[in-house]
Length: 101
Image (tube, rainbow, N blue to C red):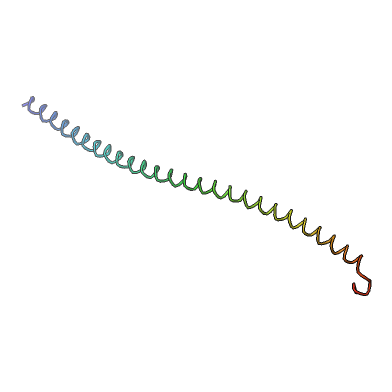
């Protein structure tokens, strides 16, 4: 009778251990699934980040190009203004006073 009781105790402990092992296996499977999902999201976020960085680089190059164009146009405008002022000054000097009024 004592050995049967001991046998039942061991069977109960074994069943309890098997239940815990089953729970742990489910948790491991859930964690592995969650890890795979996070890795997939990380890959997607990395791809999006690379796209955004490429766009930022493209926009930065465009900004530099536009800034250079603006500076060149500003220089041309300054030159044209100087030439116009010279012509205006020359025209006023060579024209009789009554035409300037």
